[in-house]
Image (cartoon, rainbow, N blue to C red; front, side, top):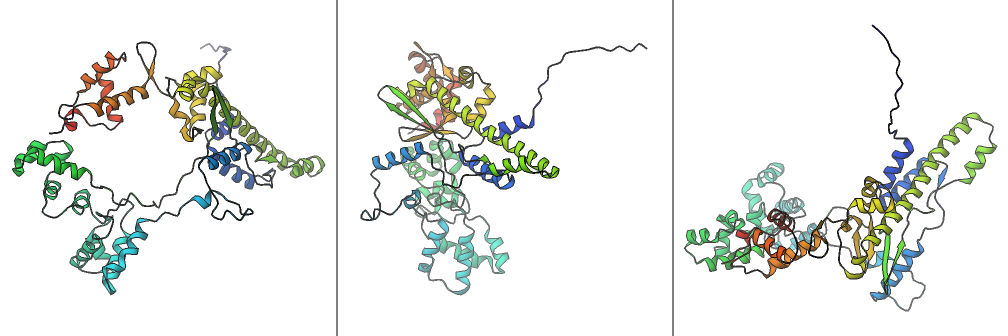
Length: 440
């Protein structure tokens, strides 16, 4: 057996700790970055945040102009010394639980009945449905199920109409008159309604299809989630934009909002201590902490530069959107080629990042859209979707258009699109199929 020693040149990608950190920080949105900075400042002694309250001049300028345009006025215009913030314009929203409790005294319940009603209301979820069964409530409270059902009916008489229902059928029935045509249809034909089988329903009930259509229209106006109009128990998520885009005549201006700039730095005290100390252990400890801190500060700066490059590229490639409100086809590759970065970097950069334009907030990923071939130029899929919605809105409801007919209409307008793509876009826009759109 002969042993040989061969030398081969192989190229491999080594993912360093610094690269991993840079990728993690790049994906953070402004609020996540703020939390990350606070966390690192607490854990790494050599990192510090400036004592003065951070305020981005560009953001403050935008907010000031926006308030003036919206005619915001202080509650007490004679007090010039009073400061105002967003908190003063936030209205405390009432929860469904609070609203039901406020009505509870009107039921005139006492003793155990009051306790049962409290328990039932506490188990009504944010959609307005009772999230547990009467059997379970009876078991927990050691009471007859008939007693629970009696009090449940009283709770179901409260506003909003439909609250306390145990399923969709009961929620809808609570919103219509008992023994009405609508109640009969809800009780027995919910599945047929979803399939638009109105002729079959009419035949079963001995009613004209137009009368059934009228009743079904009323049913569709009912609220399937009676608790949806109230404040949710879930935490409200706020968006901090990364850029403000304005149009000055024909010139597009971009102002980058940087929440991470100068918010984290290496303490001069510990840098001086590293130079002056003679203790080897302290030196090694500080060197390690400073090295990690430098990684973080550098990664935050790289994030800022990358976000700015990506936003400026998006605005440049989507110039027609900002000037003419026409979104042109654009992919991750287009931006990546423009700024000479990888598509994966562009994808990570656009995650959870937003810009403000014309008093509206747009997520960066919304500017990416595939293109379809038109007569004179490519059109974005979003434009095609919008045209699809317009075609369906103008169709004869008694003779709705098939996907193939919609495809033919778009082709006549110069947009090459298959029937299958029409069906895909229709589903994504929550437009029912031809048979379900038909009215009688």
